Length: 396
Length: 215
Image (cartoon, rainbow over the protein chains, first blue to last red):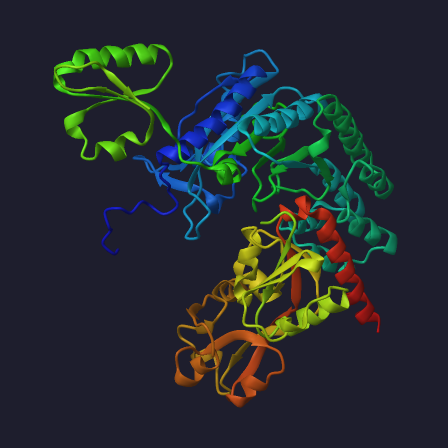
């Protein structure tokens, strides 16, 4: 290994300096207040979990996990998301709590280190999990709460794409007949490879009608009218039921007043096996990556030996910060009380008084400052308690 | 990513002319300076578009990070780079294929530690793994044909369009791997936030491609 320079951090790790921290805080405060007001309760879980439990249950691919070994040789993971740890809690220590359970978190999550920039190995995620309610209303609540959280965070423009994995699964199974082939096609959707999807359709010994049904799936993107088009290509009960749910979901979302920023996208397949029903993803114009997303994951708790329906969302704080980044401005500090030892007591009393009024006050002995003009410029207001005589002066 | 402008990442070099021709056929009015410009960014305000000219290997990178909304990239690059972008359309231009080539006297039996030179380390190692062969890869950035001649590697994996370069350097193709064409790729966020314009572009391009197929 080459010798490290003292300023270096491990690959993919970031520092947050005061200005960025403030912006991040502002975003998190917005989200925290919103989810709390919707009655979600905060939980914390350990940073490190077992690979065999939380690691394998999470939606993150194995090769993207940040792994470590403990003293007994168990493989540990730095938690890759919060959904799996919360599922663990809900299925064990909170098994007896009244349902539906509404939990929220704001925590750092980890991914395997990558050499390319823009892919941090540690970033913060804020989100909620609604456990024990299989109704469409629960899905709608989670989507609406995500929207109002983005709004509370100050995200200027956003859009949410909503899909239904149940519909995709039903259609693929119905047309292709078996799960093996269906999963091949699901993989094309998951990898966003429409060209491969179309070529695979052409090569299958299917009727031209069936081929058209599969190809139509790629075009099911837009407003509520695509539900009718989707109905015409599926006959199975499961497929129709998924569409009923989507229709229902749109009704509930209309009552939540969030239908403006929604688009339907029935090709949205975000993870191979994790999500089971409604899925959604949030975007902000001007940012190339999704801000976050979520969906229904009715089988996850079963992996912790406690079958239960659940739904939730997660928003990436780092990406929200980036989406807001353009609005970045240097932060002016509030008050500075500059004093010399003779009038120290007076200065401290003044600082205390101002703080009790809610101001934030820096106290600084004058002998510690090299350039008083430059230093005091950072503050809205500077008060001097200097010298043995004279009154406490307030400048600016 | 600018809201009004649709940013298109174009690959410089081999694919560029064909891609420009295709766009013109699809009704995009590209100015003549397009054909011999050294500039890296070309704006076409009339149609609300902006083109960035990148190395072919880098096009999916620009699109994944969202600084370009859409792009034109070879399938070879798509496989090698594994970027999180939508591969929406096979443009069917710049058709060629990936192949394994070696000197005529190459014999696998004499190959103790199989070494393969390529510009595509990931694609190469994935391909041979699927064939049940473990190989060592030497990454080169161009003139791959040189490697077997000077003894750097026994075989090479590269793009073949006419086979002329291989022949001129005394190499023979020993295996055809995968056919390659250029693809129209789209950033996942732009695919939703600029859906109308991108869908329109996809439709117009698809029409031209289908028309040419039938002709």
